Length: 308
Image (cartoon, rainbow, N blue to C red):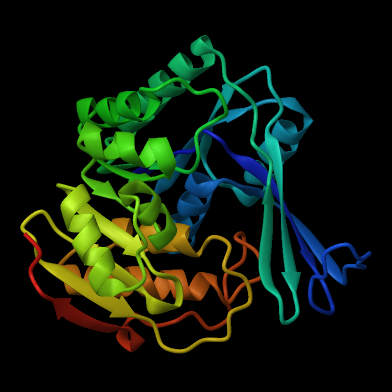
């Protein structure tokens, strides 16, 4: 069992355009979809689609929260809802021909101290009651969240007997490193923000992650695949085969899901993670599965120079 917690979930609306997105113009979409989302929700969905038990913990409130709840129920995605007074945010993804993926994300509601306390407690209960082997803390933090939420969630996961992975950015990522998360999973931009320097390729990602993250780091590099750094300093890089990208939303979540789901040698786990991340790029929405997913055997994995 793998438990995910999403402190700032969203209702995602995806619009497809017949041409490129042009700022300042009126566009008529040729298709649209609405999905329950948030990084932890996406991780749980991908895991369950691949036969791995997972449940999501998330705050829900307002009309958008009610719609998100209904969508999760219809998908049969197990979840624990923490009631909040605020309205869950809506995010918009625009898929433009020749202009790629454009995302517009609302900030989300501010959670009260009591609501944050219940989110931490509900997460600990979910991990303990299910005897989960992993807790994944995923996504951005709600606006106005005081320092310490990620630390409390990491502690709750460890106290309940689970290893803890964190996929966040900014203050949330920095806090995860200090709190002793077993795995952090930033993308190159998030790692660069933490380091205060550019991260442009696999070797630089490995160097920066080794300097900043004493535990295991799984760094997503987009079309360049991902880099894995382990506590003993060993590092490896995995690259997916060339694909025709439809939508990059949720690719990092699928990458993390693939790593958490896999067992065995690190190279095989990394290949599976990168294959799942690449497969997510072949579907229009995070709630969809591609007709022909990327096979892990098509991923190229190489050892990098030891970093520690």
